[in-house]
Length: 203
Image (cartoon, rainbow, N blue to C red; front, top):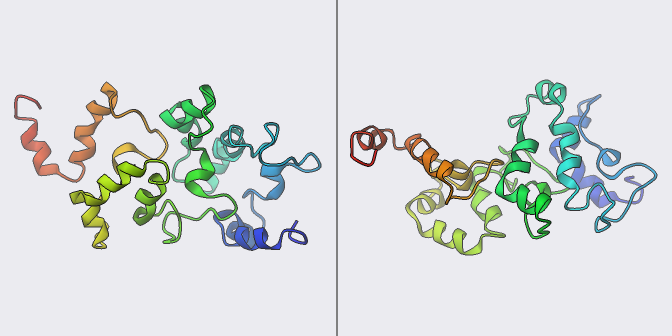
């Protein structure tokens, strides 16, 4: 594939999948795992495995495979199923809203990087900017908040979108379930406040 697609091959070689392959035999995804073999179609073709609405199922081929997630110690082994039930997954897969994010909108395409890589769109310091590609006004509000200003100073304790909303199991903040969990999520950083909050009328 690299003979015709050298730029993409270069990107892939620096990705989490490409790096895994460079260390020897690996089950990490390669070109054919995502694009197919002889039946390769354009990305905008609804029959393509990398068409936006099909991508979650394509990624889930590996990321829903318990043997692979255990072998490679994948941090979120339930990511694919969590995404499908999230507000993003339901919007894309059930309602057909093509503007809803799919895997590649947050992780990248051929250049998927580990979270510890500072150039990764899902690195802690980049999460707000990644979510802000769709949630423009929310990113602006976050940047001026106490949390956003803390992160801007280089303090990694500054929480980002995924700390409160999770990475894949994102639900509407207006749901009762989200509200019920918010005490625990805020309390993971503000333990002293949570302790006293529980003694109050509201708690």
